[in-house]
Amino acid sequence: MQELAAMLASVSNNSKKADIIVFGAGIGGLATLEVLKDYTGVHIVAIVDITEDAPAFELAREMGIQVSTDADATLASFKEGIIIDVTGDPGLYEKLDTFSTPLEIELISAKSAKLLFDLANHQLRDELVIQNQNTRMDMLDSMLGITLLLEDKPSLAEVTSKSFEDIHGHIKATKGLAVMFGTEAGAVDIIASVGENKPACTSQACDFSACNAIRAACASLTKQDRFKELDSPIRLGCCELDTCFNAILPVWQDSMLAGALLFDTQEKMNKEQRTTLEMASVHLNMTYKTLDHLHKLEEMAIFDSLTGVFNRRKFDMQLQHEVSRTKRTHDGTLSCGFIDVDDFKHINDTYGHEIGDQILKLIAQAIQSSIRDYDICARYGGDEFVILIPADDAMENEGLEVIGKRILQRVAQIRLANHPEIRTGVSVGICTQSSETVDSEKLMKEADDALYLSKKAGKGCMRILANEQYRLHASRETGIATAAYSSA
Figure: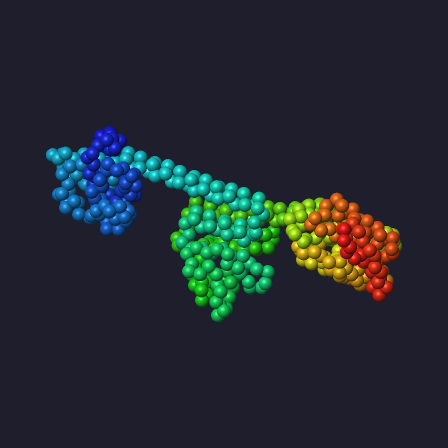
């Protein structure tokens, strides 16, 4: 045994390889091959066993090693090297001892072979532990990468797709599918796929059998199910996704099943694969929960909780952005409007704050529906709203008047079912500045000045101030007063 150890330890300095025959292709032979295969100075000539389907024969064939059930024929051609006997057969030991004595052959058997077997098993266990630890470290690195994605506030589909790619590799699945469940009944969005010819089912002839099979497999899952091995694999008998999966990992968003990861592992999963899925499931669902909280916090930071439009903080941020953008345009303008609810204190005092809150919500909706998609509406405080209207080309006075008129009319049409007698109205003041003169402080001040003029003129009317000079024109038909542009 010492000679073998010395020989193997010095193979890098020894130009002569050690020829070895292994007797016994059971567990001992398998462990011996696993250890010796990594030594470049070792040449395993053959492995011998009386059983043709011995466990080590398959590995030997993969390594290009001769396998044999004829001990005599194998020994007849072996003149020098090492014989390792891991069979534990006394009769075979006597035969090998007799054969090796007159030749330059070292025989390792009995206790020496047992020691080699124990060393081999110990090394294999160490390698397995290291491999499992490396796998878990890789998985933790993947989880960290997904967690870092949260800084960019990715979509649920992006997080799911990234997790799917990492998990699929770690559990060595031959095929996999990542799906998100749509809001429509029966809808399933396939967002990632491995081992499939088609990443999505797009055929018009599809009867959604694949979607139905996935939903049916998920129907019995609960939030306590980290993952589930399926006794009967899911068969996706679809025209473009005709395949099977035997493991499913559900993805939850609060109490709603938002998606699922499906895998085909071919064989029953081992303990390490189950641990990987357990870790991945916990992390993915925690990531979903964190992402949901981040979105809610973001909404709280920029949206008014009562009316649903932007809050003052978001408006102030957007104002600076739009001022900078307008300055970079050639003929652009930026308009700002203050909108104040008429007699709102009277509504609160007469009907209570709950009714007042309902009125504010409906007014916010009326304003939001009166402006363009890329315009900004925010609740500035109390019963006061503010709008921001950017334009790359000059916004003519008539365009602002149309927007203001829509706001006045839609607010005037507001009715409460439980208090139809309540009439609402607003006063509007708008200021517009060109790219040459735009300034955030002046824009806000002059919009406030225009609102003051509107309030002073009466209820339910509007004033527009352009480039620090304005002329008022009253319209008896609409009850709206507007300001026309004049040169600065």
